[in-house]
Length: 89
Image (cartoon, rainbow, N blue to C red; front, side):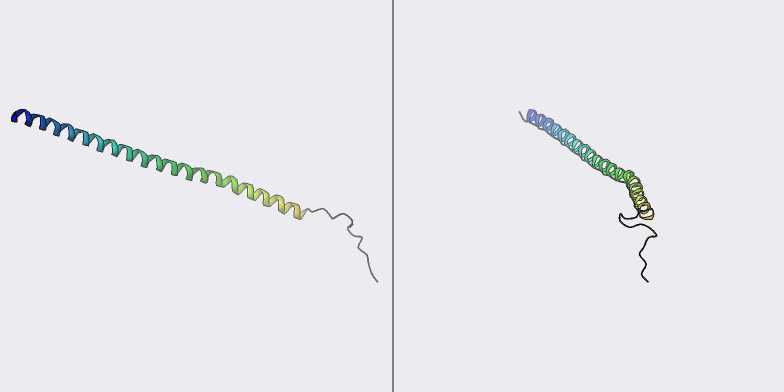
């Protein structure tokens, strides 16, 4: 019985050691996968913001140009005619 018990204990120890190694390996793979996913998600968000920046700048520049052109070439206000200002003597 002692020899049988020793063999059984040895087998259990081997199984437990293998299970712990598998768990540690799976945990490391899972952790690495999660870290990689977070890194990729962060990089994707940063690249999207960077790609959108030129469009926003162009839109702002275009709006400023339209605004400036409107002020430069403004039409006279209704009711006032150019060159017909009242002169007082």
